[in-house]
Image (cartoon, rainbow, N blue to C red):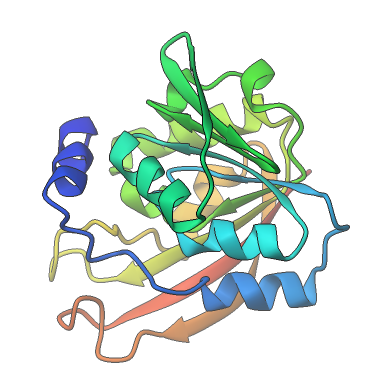
Length: 212
């Protein structure tokens, strides 16, 4: 599931993963672990998630990264906001009040570009990456955010039943991936009604990942 896969999905408007409301586990997490208003939250591989609008409405600032420019133009259209757009090296920076989005490969995003981060909200990034990219992703985020704490949503299911994405990232793999930089705590777990994509019995998990 590399660059061309996701670019094609957005160009063909095949967006089966897109949710019409803010993720309920994010809402629950913020309710249980409130952040000071004005805190800056990083949303990697964000698509046009409604989580961003919800976070802005709660008084937070958001920085995000996304491969598809189509997704980000739709995001700003839905927010009814006209962004300022500026090329920054390999990335394109879309900005508005309280919101910065970098379009391009997340691995090209630098610490200077992203700026200060109080929390990473990983709602669909880890589970979108194939196994051979996940360790590099965890290391990169730790580096560019000064090991900011993370709220990570993952899935657990039999990968032989469906191929993903979203991929299954079970608890032992979460622990193995993050152990070098963080300690991880399982906060919530719930069964997915009807199974993942109506095929595979699955659970959705939410983790708090904090620096050691």
